[in-house]
Length: 272
Ligand SMILES: NC(=O)c1ccc[n+]([C@@H]2O[C@H](COP(=O)([O-])OP(=O)(O)OC[C@H]3O[C@@H](n4cnc5c(N)ncnc54)[C@H](OP(=O)(O)O)[C@@H]3O)[C@@H](O)[C@H]2O)c1
Image 1 (cartoon, protein in one colour):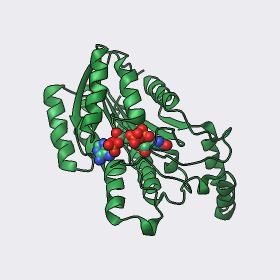
Image 2: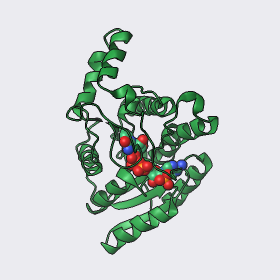
Image 3: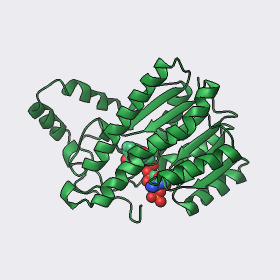
Image 4: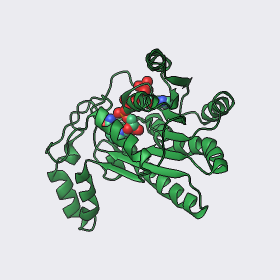
């Protein structure tokens, strides 16, 4: 069991969405939350709210697309806060454009934030966890890391990579007989604004998830050392569909509306 009380918990993308909700909920469990985001004003708002409630919080404005900035901020955290017990790699971005309309810079940014930052964050904070032989690394990927979708080539590819990162890291830790745990999180669309405009065809099977529900499920999964959280459960059907010919697979994903889910996507205006 990974208990939050008294632990130092670093959450990226904590100024908004499920990162912010997890920060509030985990701080309420008497953890010291260390919040990273590119959005300084958003971080200040969360921190002020938490401090008013008597919570322990530290904030760092960091651009996760900048490897050197990550390593520099990580050193600052180690000096000012100490070793991190739970690292929740949550920050993510989406372009939502067909491949040929998606600028190269945007594709690289998506991989920097959604994928490469996982490497730099984990390289920065895992050594202390290994030294203490305890800790937890959480990767917030997506159901888009399991099933591809039109208009999400960069996003899905970056999240497929995130799942491969988690799986390989977990196996490396097993070879080391380490007690450091990992959790991969793969939610379907969540009503945070990041995917504003998306739609689902069969809401009873593939509902747009509520942020509060998602944050609670992630927290419970970390506390119980769950290695994988896929929600809703219907997403697991993907693994059965994969044994069928690709034409049948694509037909079924199309039937369930997945490949048209991004047709009316607008996203959050002003997002990085
Ligand atoms: N929302 C969904 O439907 C959904 C579904 C499945 C998985 N997920 C995943 O869940 C995670 C959280 O999603 P969410 O919906 O909570 O997103 P969100 O509300 O957009 O929050 C993401 C946070 O990350 C920050 N961020 C963006 N670029 C950054 C950078 N370069 N450096 C540091 N911070 C950066 C954002 O700041 P700005 O707002 O200033 O850009 C924002 O505060 C993401 O990894 C996402 O891919 C989301």
